[in-house]
Length: 225
Ligand code: DGL
Image (cartoon, rainbow, N blue to C red):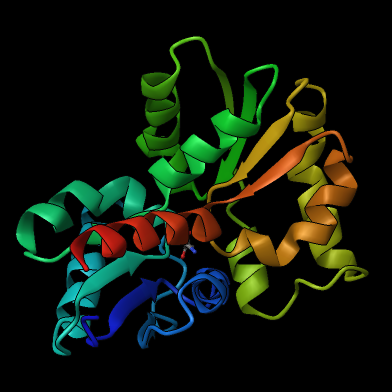
């Protein structure tokens, strides 16, 4: 086994939801986690700024001798993944493809919702990936810009009136869409799973993009090792 660590990064603490899965699925691996909490949130910034930050994040992580990088951030994956892959000679896994694959596997009616940051929604990456995998799929995307700052400020517990009100405002319209799957396209959102499930109802399955990416990372490492 290659004993070098895996680098994991996000704009903040959201990527720790992927680390949680990493510890379960790849417990023998060593991780180096970078959360750019000085500059979070990324999601309201331009594509150019996000790419610039992402390059700096990768450069910092690569000051360690890594065997792979997990971009545990929807916003960086949707805006910067192809560029980062082209510029770096090590495996880089993002969250979009794994989440889309899982969503299509779980969905029966092929009406899939996706919530994420403004930059991720603007990129169209989740829709494009879902349509490429299944041209029949219907996709409803919604940006939820206030969720990341609230989570970063510790407002993610069920019973917190502020996060519950904001989440309901964003998600209530999605309830009318007849979705059977909702992709949590930002890695901060799994911290809101109970609140989101309460609003969306039990018939809507939630897909955790960060957790799904760890399965892909597992496969990539297994092939190389
Ligand atoms: N966890 C990041 C994501 O997946 C949050 C982005 C932000 O900082 O706005 O998109």
